[in-house]
Length: 308
Image 1 (cartoon, rainbow, N blue to C red):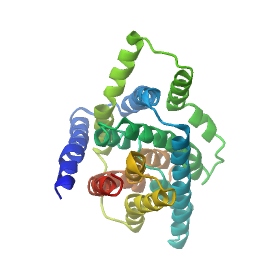
Image 2 (image 1 turned 180 degrees about the vertical axis):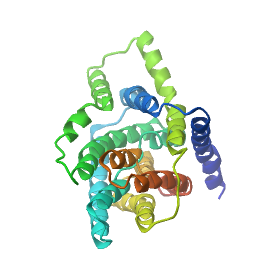
Image 3 (image 1 turned 90 degrees about the vertical axis):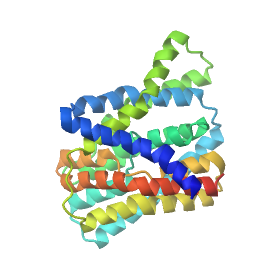
Image 4 (image 1 turned 180 degrees about the horizontal axis):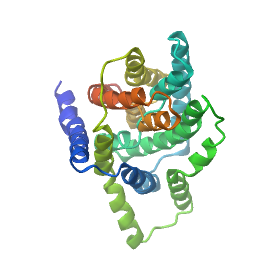
């Protein structure tokens, strides 16, 4: 119980305090959400990715295990969410948003700050989260986008949108410089590292601003199923895959925690853009983020017990 309370006080309270500050400031001053989104996507997240990958000491076999875990876990979520949507008789638009709400997780402006706090003294944990973030970006702009546009259109634009994401290029550049043992001059490294350090606070304030005006009228069946799938089913599947792959230590902790993060805001963005029940999508993002204060805390606690 003492460890659980420490996690709540040292990890979850700071996170949700920043989210609350973001919501309050947005209601007071009305931020330009497009600018905030671009600041996170095109500057902060790529900087965090570059710094952590360049500094990481992850071996190739470890990277393969992480990718194997992510493939198995997400295939399981895709299959199960598709079956649930069919059994529940959701229409095509609702089905697309429901599946995205279960499969796509917020590993950017929620997951990465959580990992930075949990693995403050174990950088490999943050590096694992970076790999998960890259994988989720790929999944978002392939499977997630195709889900949304396939209701009316073909998903041929998915690859183009994915290639526009600067995180990919930050990853490739960091890997290339690291492989070639190219040192980065201090006058370049200092601003990159400073930008990366600013990510956690700005990302969580942005998430709070996104949630500031969302209204929740009732807990509908699709919303409840989304919450169960994203916050309960996903970490359960993650734990099973970890045990099947015989993972342990910080790697296992980071992957287990990453499997428990709330629904990605991209699910809501796609639903809004393509008219696939946007209100339901926005509610899922907000409510899963709020409830994740309990579920993610519990998973962090279990991860430390099971894989210490």
